[in-house]
Image (cartoon, rainbow, N blue to C red; front, side):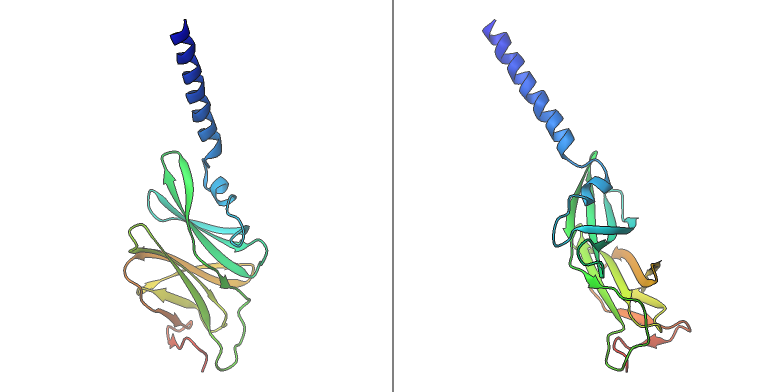
Length: 176
């Protein structure tokens, strides 16, 4: 009788731990991203991009500072999700005619996996910028609320980004 009671108690404890773990760990990208706290707290979710079968990137604005664009890399573990990287932020503003000496675009690169895979987000501040490339790959435009944003992903080493106008002419990073 005593062995049976101990076995039943151990079984109930293990069952409770299993149920608790299932309830605690996020089971969706939305629940994983909602757990990000300050200073990376999620405001408006702008886009998600499946990077491969286990990694997803999420682009969002900061909850406290709505002019900050941020991204997070989320990894899927079985049926659970975990935020593995929250990498800084870049300022976003509506594109305008810039003065000489002003930066035309801001770029933020997040490295994940073995450190050779990247996810890049960019914000163009200059009306002349129509295309941004990174690793010689054209970034995907994301026009949200009038902002001129871009994102992309791939494998490779850190290189510079390039800016182009609507005619395909290369632009300097700083307005001349």
